Every structure is written in structure tokens, then in C-alpha cells.
Amino acid sequence: MEHQQPTEIVEAEGHLIDSQLLNVIFDKVIERQSRFEVLQFDIGRTNDEFSHLKLQITSPDDATLRELVEDLMALGCHPLPEREAALRIADSAYVLENGRIALEGPGPALLTDSKVQAAYLGARARVPAGDPAQFREPPS
Image 1 (tube, helix red, strand yellow):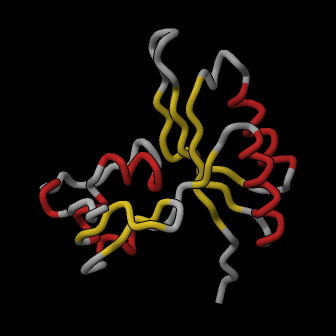
Image 2 (image 1 turned 60 degrees about the horizontal axis):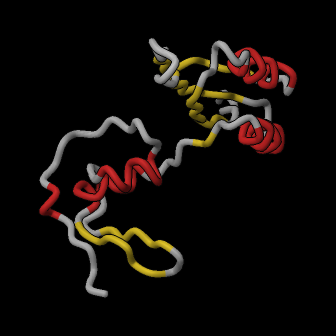
Image 3 (image 1 turned 90 degrees about the vertical axis):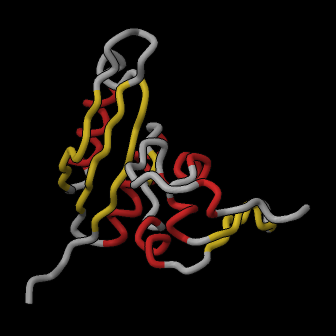
């Protein structure tokens, strides 16, 4: 059986090309003896539009992957949480903020909430549209 190398998906957003940050990100991955695959790259077309990168990184071991993710976070990247799969199958889910329930409802409904997407799933999470009435903010 083939050994599965640890993998993480990270995202970055900003002026990635003209700031040379894209090159720095790629160089950092290679420097850590890891590999990358560009999963998505949207180029900002004006000075006001940011570019968006979604990158899958694969490292030889967990420690190297952790160190690489820390290096990339210092460059403005953020890991894409793996919460999406759990929300798709959850009958009910809760979003906690500062130890308090901020939102609750069926997992698939929370998955489509723009606040949840931006805060926990990456700002450009692509999920099917849902009925926002399916979830509710808990009483104060």
C-alpha cells in the first residue's frame, strides 16, 4: 500500500503578481522540499481587484507540512478548513464565537451562510445555494 503524504489547501488573496508574493509562496514550498498544485487562480483585472489563489501543498511528513503552513501564513496565506464535509452531513450544527453560540441550524444551511463561508470556509467557498431561513441566530 502506498504511503499517503500529508496535504493541506491554503488560500491567498491580494496583489499576488505585482508584489511578487506569488513567486515567494512557490519558492517557500520548494524550499521546504514540498510540492504544490494550483487548484484555482483568479487574477484581479484592475488595481482595485485582488487576485485569489487556492493552492494544494503536499509535504514529505506532518512536521514539514506544519512548518510550511506556518511559513505561508506569515506571507498572508491561510489554511482552508476541512469543516465543509462535516457540515454537509450534520443534522444540526453550531457556530461558536468566543465560547458562545453565534449561529445554529442544519449543517447544510450553515454551509451556505455567507458569514460562515467567509469566516470559516474561505471567503470564496463554493457551495450550493440554500434557504437562509433554515438557520437562526440563537436568543441572546
